[in-house]
Image (tube, rainbow, N blue to C red; front, top):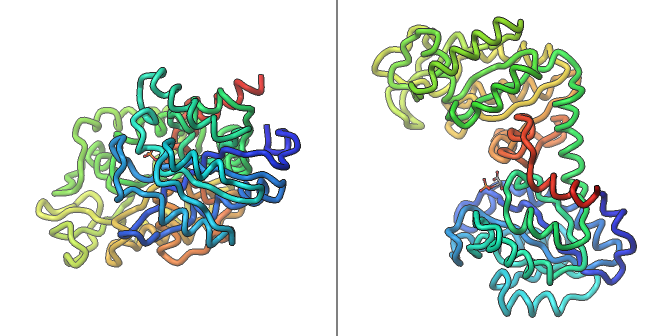
Length: 398
Ligand code: 3PG
């Protein structure tokens, strides 16, 4: 269901879950992409004559109030972008929240403090989550789910609360799900997936599924060294998950049997230390010196990866190719981002971190087909998993 299926919202109070989990430097937001992505639904609700109560999390506080994780910077930025004051409660479901919500008029916006200040939010105990969800539900007449980045979490403000109120998906969730469906069900081929980031173990399940749905997997980032080790190469001091080597060998065998390609780098930018100013050298991928560690893919690989991407009609990319925040090791990530902007077809940047990285490298959002707000959520979708925050909405539809 969409927001328009919720009927006349004039004078109604809409409880909405957004993903405002933005990167912060102290109290300064370094990438407000997720806040901007939340605007269309909020504007739609306010335009429909509703008042809005926003629920969101920031970081992973330990189920108790912690000023470091306050939503104050997000509330301020949201207010600036909406040109409406966002009244932030000083607690999540306590007296302050009740007072702020009770004082809301049509066209006004309140925000509850970080939902993860409540132990019930992330509890594994369903009864504990349900009790907290009851408190959230008392703050709204209807519930809108618009935090795509968090729909893979079975948490009180994402999952349990949706069972207690008439609900609908917001436009952000709808747009994201449409793109994910296109990737999994009807990708224009060739469909190339580029994966980077530190750990293979984080991406095991998604790789297994992508070997079925995609035509080519291009691998870079810290996890590539486990792939190179599985080829029998020495990787020096590079990041290595030795316990995953056998699994990766299985991927090679599977790809060969099904005619899929796994593209690995042929050269690597190495340095003696994990430091921004450690002196970089380019070496062949099968000759990483014992006293060096790989911090980026090399220029030959960047060119080959860019070719593979540009030859595709569908591309999904998650995870940097190297230590993109350090200039000397950002070349691979830049080349991949640039190639995505040149795709004749659908190009998708997946994930909060990858999205922040492309913006920090100076790329405009509209240079890509779609920038997903969900990292873990988009990977779990592509993995073929049922996402609780989406399934619960479907349940109500039934
Ligand atoms: C994210 O940053 O991917 C989402 O906001 C979810 O955050 P989480 O991984 O802490 O649940």
